[in-house]
Amino acid sequence: MSQVTQVTLDNGLKILLKEIHTAPLISHWLWYRVGSKDESTGKTGISHWVEHMQFKGTPQFPASVLDKAISREGGNWNAFTFIDWTTYYETMPAAKIELALRLEADRMVNSTFDPAEVDSERTVILSEREGSENQPLFLLGEAVQAACFRVHPYHHEVIGDTADLHSLTRADLYQHYRQFYVPNNAILALAGDFDTASLLERIRQLYDPIPPGPTPARLHRPEPAAQGEIRLTVAGPGETTYLEVAYRSVAGSHPDFFPLAVLDSLLSGPSNLNMFGGGGVSNKTSRLYRALVEKELAVGVSGGSTATIDPFLYSITLTIHPDRTPEQALAALDSEIERLQNELVAPDEIARAIKQARAMFAFGAENITNQAFWLGYAEMFASYDWFLTYLNQLASVTPADVQRVALNYFKPQQRVIGIYLPNGEPQPETSDD
Image (tube, rainbow, N blue to C red):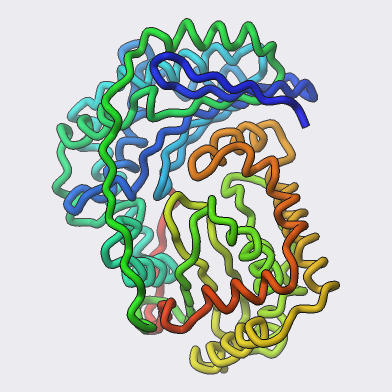
């Protein structure tokens, strides 16, 4: 695997560079340590809204020229806000990476937050929120997540609550931007066809003049221990019944994340930790597929967790068969979990689960964009060494490890069960954001 160069500038910006000369491309990712968990009551959704405003231009790069400039140079770009972080990426022909370098250094400091653009984007985000509310799995997931986190700011969805989206002001957005978009709260990661020394010199020219900001204040509200199983129902449009079961899980940096990843592969099929790319691995050999889909209790099953800074959730979602009830499906699910807790999994089944999880991980790390993604993403919750050692950590998981984490984390008192009950009304048509 190619060597990674790590440098931290005097202003606190951490830089990770990985030369890959397989194609004349460079992928450029700028990560900020700010997400929906950094939002207080009354300001939910502000991180996502600030991300939108970063595409509205600076004096040097007006909004009207940004898209055309990237596409004209043969590149693609996007941005994402999550509970723990916000990231911006451009994948460009290697000879054209200068545009991405200049653009992101400029956006760190000079985004304008024009009041008219703020008002226009309010309408866009409210419409996005309204569209999500037409989706049963969004409604169910939001209710389950809120029930899982009463205190911790993982309580709310990234898009924010409607009341806050109506009340947030331009001043709120700009203050959030200035507080968190500082070099000492960011990581710049590039992978691709470049010379490390010359690229690093150019990055220094662009970023050294940017002063650091005060270390951003963080909300510290640990979630108290669960007091018992919570059950809830959500009613809404559609014809399909869904069941979501969410267990308290661990942070991405916790040693138990790896046996839980093997358990996930075994139980519901491996999860793709790279949420922006990579292929798929069938879950038809998973225990829940065999116990629920093949036996016509459900027509679909998915599960998994994501790597987060603080302990988050392991969730299982079932699409209930039209001729069955959520209670029947839940009973079968519980039976499979009890098997994991009471019986050691055979070594060959563990080996297959590890192989599938490794394959999913490899699919999500194979191209240049994904290589650059992992440079920064792993730093958000652990370090790049986490990525480098992931496959070895999986390989070391034993049947006893899987049984132990099943017993520790899949306790009824540590879960929320949510049922979506359709009312038979048609779902409104929604357009993509």
